Image 1 (spheres, rainbow, N blue to C red):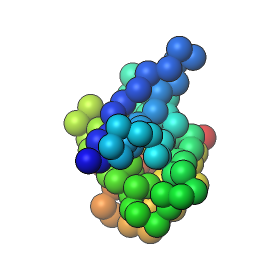
Image 2 (image 1 turned 90 degrees about the horizontal axis):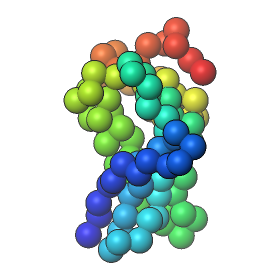
Image 3 (image 1 turned 30 degrees about the vertical axis):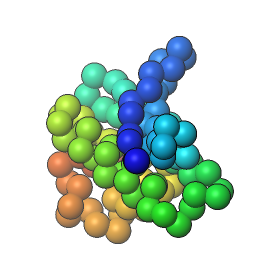
Image 4 (image 1 turned 120 degrees about the vertical axis):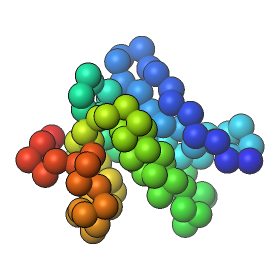
Length: 100
């Protein structure tokens, strides 16, 4: 069973963690501000790569941003690459001029 949860950390950062059978196998390191969400890094365990888990985290991120009316600032190379490949699909959550 795959599940994605938002986990808040003590240092004001958070992450979307992807669980497979209750074990974290991928995470997206983020920080949520009043009108933006910064994405710092996406990591999938080496033995779990190639299963589409990064894409599932990305889809969850975009859904979360749309639901909460947030703009995504992709410091993470993976997220930036997804946006750059299909900018028309993400115009509502990605502003090119708000990098870093």
